[in-house]
Length: 166
Image 1 (cartoon, rainbow, N blue to C red):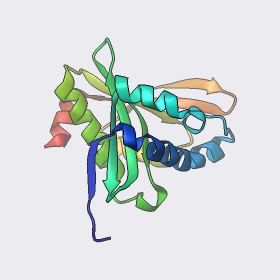
Image 2: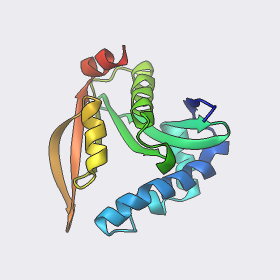
Image 3: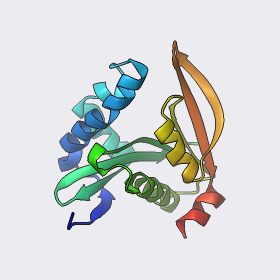
Image 4: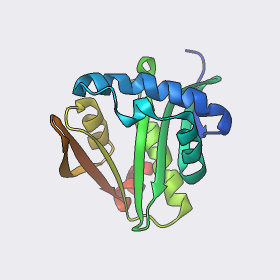
């Protein structure tokens, strides 16, 4: 490729690229579950701009192109909530998802005390489940979200995140 991918904080100028990448990346999820109305595919630009203001949004850049993104925030219980991890299809299987996940964990830890990290994915999203397991996340529950869809909730204690960050 000749260029390295750099992870940084998203800016207002990134919102359109993030939304396009999100749309591209979550199409496979929509197809997997037969539901094209999932929130990542219907989110508005204005909604994403609001998220930039109230949570950490990181992007992975290859030159000027946003090729990955992830969001995170710490809730009132000290849980780092991670969401919308997406990597451009041509950049998948090169470790970028894991790098983004570690970067958002580090960013949340630097912000305030965190006792654990939590995220979720669909029960049929086997690639996601493998990635999260490799990163130290363990299944804590399965929530029925509708006919044919269950969300698998995964969590990682902070001490484990600190150990993998080294």
